[in-house]
Image (cartoon, rainbow, N blue to C red; front, side, top):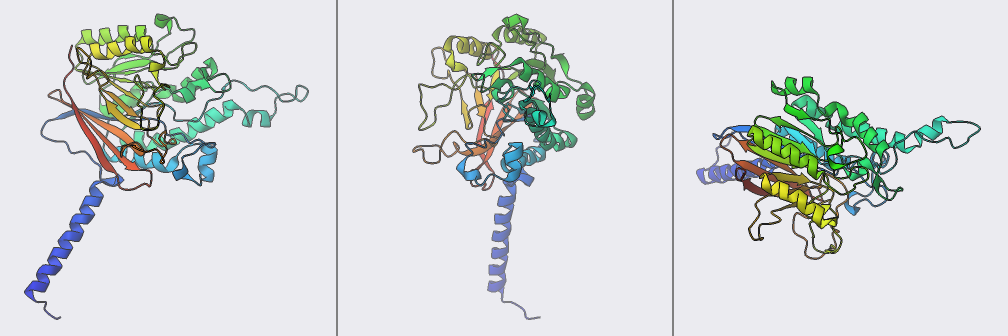
Length: 405
């Protein structure tokens, strides 16, 4: 064996160290190496949140072309969503709150009519119906998230407009679709045995039986708008598109729910809904066309005043984009509440690649990981990867102080 000179050995060692450092840096941002360290400041719990994974067969994002035969049938952006799922699994989140639009839906999931009155209802009538489409799409999405549950992350679903609304009915929520939601998601809301098996303790003060009466709604809102406590924190899911009151939060029910949680002395309050309270106007969007609850500013303000009053944080989707804002930070007096918009789970991006002036994160598949610390700190870290499916990046970190109540 020929001995190398000392200078050459040094050069070889430096090259090996450089390669190792590069590899380690790449691994640190890969989907399989996103585990969050448990630092000296004990973490009480952590949760991930994202929404909007469904594919659009008519208007897919150009970066997903050609849409695979699989995704044309099951209507998911399987490539992006499965990568996010894998990342969340490796981050060891206690929960995944999915903020709606997990399916394309948008039909009317009732019993189909017979195409031929004489022949009666046929197999083709059933298989081609909206009812079958809803159940098929739910089943595929549930199959994708099942490994998270097996790995220890409890999946908490939030209804979106594509789950409860019917496009052909004027983009209005339908009772048939609310029923289909409960049929396909109700076992998660809440599975007390599985919850306890995962965490060694049950959810506290679960309220999943909202009738809708508090907000004068015409349909049962059980398992659509609901809440529970866990380890001293309060979690609320709201249906932002109840039948007859589309694009409105259930303000009265929420007011009662948050007051009760505050009276119990919860440490933090986290609210999850599909539509944002404040639309995010990215470069090239139309500021005269709000996409969220701000379509009715007065009703939105009622909702947001509760978020501010109880020091809550609001997580949402609907806009296929990532953004974090404190909507009233510049108001007099200033507001402190955060809105975390993570409608970036795989659906076609709202911001076109050709738009001038976009921020770097406007076309990223992104999710948020929230860690609640024993000393009251809430640290929100947003992760994402670009539309070319490059390396996963930590794209923003925000620390939210203890609630001001």
